Length: 206
Image (cartoon, rainbow, N blue to C red; front, side):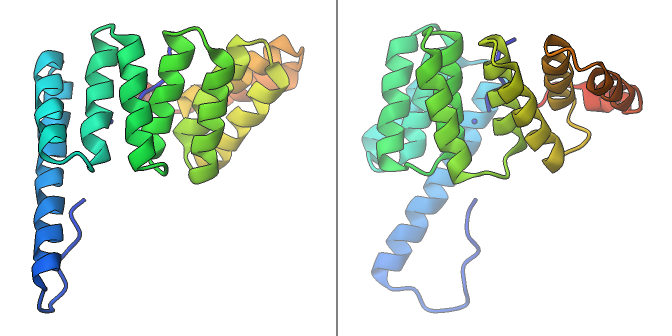
């Protein structure tokens, strides 16, 4: 099962801004606009345009980690996996606290580069940064399940369900792990929980 991947302007206070503040605020606004453009292109699957935008963005502002993040997204989508890893890792050097970048790097390593140990390590790092991220726990459950670590898979799925009891992916990972462990009561409970969810909950998490 392929892992889910996942791609703010601050309100200005009513104070006078110094020249440095104005420059910083202008860069933040520009970055936010570029993020919006990149997201729109990603939604349309226009990967060459995403890459071109991100490369120009990085040339204009080499310190903006998001430019490298979107390079990674575009490169991964077009099958340039090694280059995508490089882009993600360069982005993380600029912003080590970016959960989305850690998550995408983990997915790339697991799904495309056949490096599951590195992938688990990346996702564990992401969850240290954001332990309340249900997608991260569900993705880690998926990894453990595919690696045959069914106890860990069930534990991670249950962490996701503590955050969102209606998360379909987490219920499925929990049920699959429990089935492999012969825990029929948990399988039955997960099946009953899934049966009670409205249809819109079964749309894939974006």
